[in-house]
View 1 (cartoon, helix red, strand yellow):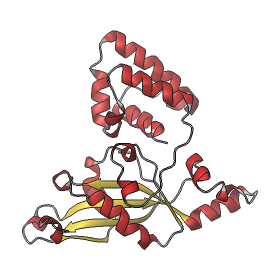
View 2 (cartoon, helix red, strand yellow):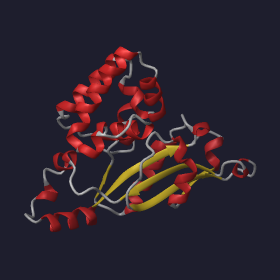
View 3 (cartoon, helix red, strand yellow):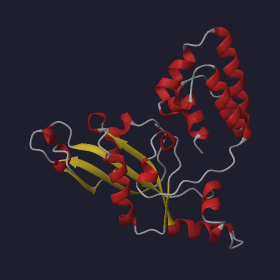
View 4 (cartoon, one colour):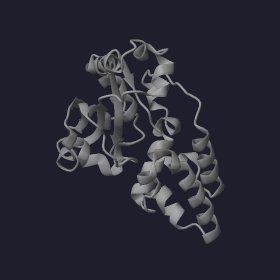
Length: 230
């Protein structure tokens, strides 16, 4: 590392409480799910550590039961037993999911997200590490850290909503920032707002009546973005 700042940075084990100190800087505010491991970057500089000692965090969570892209990447390895309980046991034993990577804004553009992923993955001692995230499309630090990218066929409902969002000025790059997207939606004129609201309702229909009836709020926008990143 040639950067003088970086020589004071160290990656050490952390806790979910460490993530919460930086969670306001992450584009997703929903729960991380069952946590498997947390690592953090600390700044050991005598002065800076008094201001913001934690400058980056990565959270590894237990995996979801079934993920389309996982089946593509592993050629269905975790679906072959014929028993859902056995499949789930194999998933839990062999997979961990990167559910959060967040860097304090003043420390960005130093390649810390890439280093955090690259240096902590081996510490999990797990056969497979996966990450499902919109951020990976905007900043491919997962690939830089050695992970392989897999893309599946996106559901037509997602394609339609992405296109509709683009029509009203909300492009792919915006989807990493929930507040930005929500604010843009609120500022639309009546015609555009009615158009996108119909598109959103149609998109949410798949997820059941409770979700479909969510009020127009930051929470609903967060849910929509999380579904688009699946």
